[in-house]
Length: 289
Figure 1 (cartoon, rainbow, N blue to C red):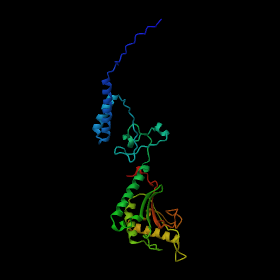
Figure 2: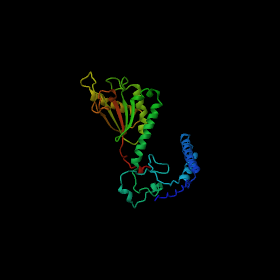
Figure 3: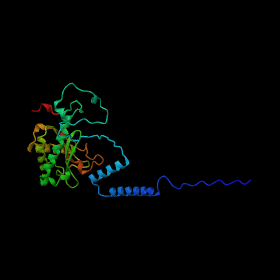
Figure 4: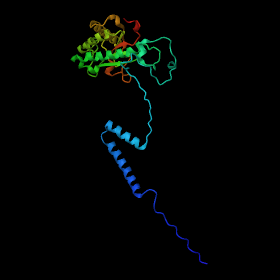
């Protein structure tokens, strides 16, 4: 018996979303991407950028996330008399409190720790920076000293502020084998004296020679020459206004402490070093009138 064919099901070609709407959505997506690219390549205007960001956030539903950024103080702000101690290491003092009130730090906010900082620890680097700027200014104002600017070096170390008057290749600061400086060196030392006199720190002066020098007198070598140059520098500073009581020591180091240890024969190793010593003042700064 022949099996009767089952009636074919009628296909429903109609979808729930009209075809024109799908094409329109694709076109809108392309336009949005094009709009974003145009904004990205154009010159950014802060106000317009915020408007675009707000529109995109409203359209796509971004959630706002707030994160607080840390603040690192370098030189402090006008509202703060002292810098806060900032460290990445856990500090036990952050959770401890003293019973003594520190009135000079009362405007630093409730987050500040109550441990008092030594004022000398903060004032000494600032004082040295000001002194270095004053020395550079005094040297720049003298055209004779300007010609030997490459021979004058200022550097801050743990020991204090080092003022170096060093030889350069073809331009020495002292006559060869002599303890007496050239005129430009003399004027550079004279310009130093008023600035050093205004500082409370002690001064140490040392003379240094380069290796490989020859001396005509066997009784007068590197040790004698380096000391004599340092001592003559001391005399010139005192003649220009530096009090003799401020001199802590005068020494000749000969070739024992080269500035360039990897090449002790360089001319720059022959120098006068004037060190403003980094030390606690004899009288605490809070006792100053």
